[in-house]
Length: 179
Ligand SMILES: Cc1cc2nc3c(=O)[nH]c(=O)nc-3n(C[C@H](O)[C@H](O)[C@H](O)COP(=O)(O)O)c2cc1C
Image (tube, rainbow, N blue to C red; front, side, top):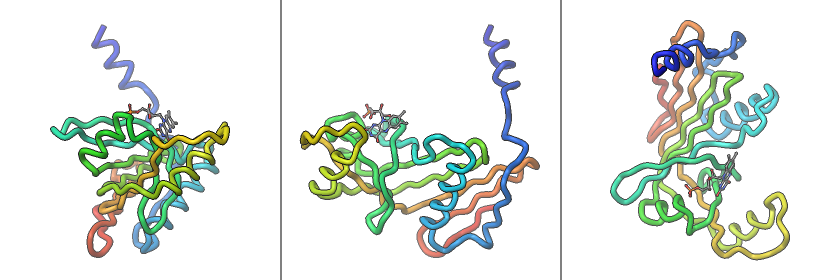
């Protein structure tokens, strides 16, 4: 049975035929600009929620956990996400204010990874985010918190059929291309 499942998984579809070209030498200096471009292209390619990402946090003892969240904004504070402070991730961020985000856009074989320290944004900004949610009924939720992941590392990854996948890295100091 486990052998059959292994073979079943092995036979599942790979990256689609029509992958975009990506030349890191022509990438903008600002990773947020490249991200906005890839997000727009993912939406145009039919990704239903291109702003959904996996958020990884870790407990005080290092045990990681992850789940899907919606990206709310990118500004000078960082990459915004929102959740309940009392949730598992809220408690983990209180104990260990570091996180990693991961976006995956299958039609294009593209992944974006973002990691760094996390700060809590203001109560006003958190309330505004709560009230802007679909289905908001005007009620307060003091447990709702907007956070910003300050990007120490951002990696753009583009799949290629020849398996020479392209990794374009923005980190401390100058942008580095890790192809
Ligand atoms: C597409 C999608 C988007 C989601 N967006 C959010 C979000 O923005 N904030 C949030 O708190 N939970 C969101 N969730 C639910 C989380 O994945 C998670 O189940 C919940 O927040 C509890 O996580 P925790 O127990 O690890 O704290 C989303 C789930 C999905 C599938």
